[in-house]
Image (cartoon, rainbow, N blue to C red):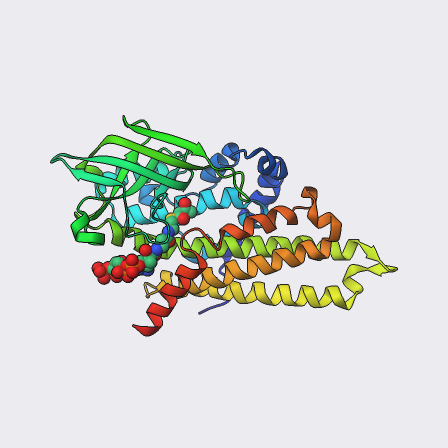
Length: 379
Ligand code: CAA
């Protein structure tokens, strides 16, 4: 693996950094307080090519590698994890899955506007009674010949209200367990589809997380992704890639908090000298920087393996496990370095500490990552 970024990767990184500082930083505290979805900013992310970065240009994507994607995710997550989760779901769980497994017709109709960022997508797997235990899907997709009749409820769906296109995982034949599950493309506005309540969350408060209700929604057969019964494999394969995006998000939250703390330590004085001149703070900074660098290596390794067409399942789970863990530790230390100022909203680290927690929960909890890693080790 080459640690030297290419000219193109560096320019993507810089573009994401500039966008985060110029467009996301202003108002990020207010959006968090008011739980306001960053609509304008997400629209601009589409115009700048951040919503379908890895998608083939023939479907309006950027045709970039996964390394470029994680570089952009890190920069955007340093400032606004609510915007970056919207970006991550659209790129990894929706566009990537559609490009890899969708029909040509689905790519023309759905992938093109999604990759251009003209519309947003959502990935709907979790249910009130099926989170980590994803094979226990209660949502049903009854085969009615030309269409599926969709019934059920999905929970904690990122982009729940802002999306126009939803990939919904549902059980068609319970007797076949995970082999009876399908992935269906559902459009907002299909009769019987209702967006439910918005969750009032601890962190990523700008992202719109909703429950979704489906009552006798007729979904055309042409909207099924892959063969009959492919839905669970679709969800798992897509999530493998998604976990690289969330690992990069966790890395960004950690490195953002570290950068705020580093800057603060050079400005604030205590006992007659800057905080950065106290060994107690220097040692904290040293540990934070080392953890961040180690997480970045894991994230880049997973992205690199994916780009090489190699098996990246274990690497992605390891990257997410470790990056989300150090995001907790680093953001907590960043608050500690800020002292009382770290506990109030205007210094950003308080928000980043709250945002960090979700990276240990969504797209597979810490415990699920350990399960995936150990299964890979023992296979
Ligand atoms: N990659 C590819 N295939 C996988 C896989 C993986 N990582 N993990 C399991 N599979 C396949 C298995 O090979 C098996 O298929 P075959 O029978 O054809 O071989 C099938 O899936 C079922 O696997 P298991 O028998 O091992 O099923 P299980 O119930 O014991 O375990 C699980 C499955 C790994 C725990 C799975 O349920 C899982 O990953 N759960 C976590 C779900 C999750 O990540 N949810 C996040 C919600 S989405 C989200 O958060 C999005 C958002 O909005 C931000």
